[in-house]
Amino acid sequence: MNSERRPPEPARALILDFGGVISRTLFETHADTERALGLPAGTLAWRGPFDPEGDPLWRSMQAGRISERDYWLARSGEVGALVGEDWDRMETFVQRARGAEPAAVIRPETEAAIRAAKAAGVRLAVLSNELDLFYGAGFRDRLPLLTLFDVIVDATHTGVLKPDPRAYRMCLDALALAPQACVFVDDQPRNVAGAQAAGLCAVLFDVRDPRRSCEEALAHFGLTLPSPVREPSGETDAQ
Image (cartoon, rainbow, N blue to C red; front, side, top):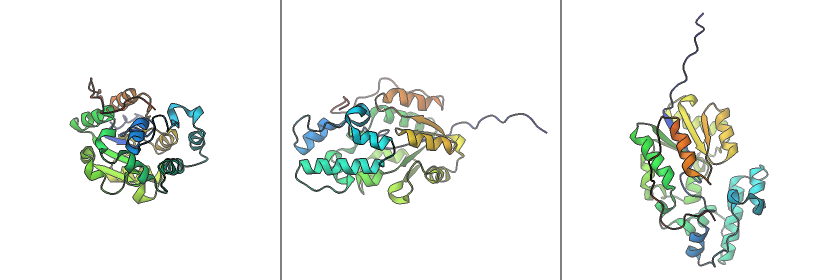
């Protein structure tokens, strides 16, 4: 009997969540949102992971009492009421806050990591719970960065949300790769735990330190993040 252990399969694909990982969070762009909607500066005070103690609704989501979709649907309704409108869909909020320039909300660190991985021959995938749901039909066509991806699996259409094991399996099947060959990156701990349970190498993306998180992901492929990375236009501080 051969007792030698097989070496681990080398990482061949990078699977990224979209909101929070590829795009900056809505928490980080409060000032931009206020300007876009004509709201006084400082109106939007909820800050999610940047101030969990000051955001009880965020804590409820983190504790699993409500879903991420529930959280954003509630915030959409609140912001819609501030401008005298009834927003019963998350995409209304996102499109009104960000729709004019989708590329402006992309994290420069993550874009640099994506391009470095692509240049090195790493396969790329998006595994999102709400890409089209948040941004609406046609968004992908206005974001050239997404053309670099080999696979996009979006629960808006599959109906299977992370951390359901089937969500990861759908992405792996589309890539035709084993879990051990993929590195998954998400900003939600429960989604990272779900990926690890499905056999993937997983990185918890810290929205408060995106550069470190990108460097950690790229290290699995023997790659480094280019420096310096261009800064996004507009606001850069966490709000």
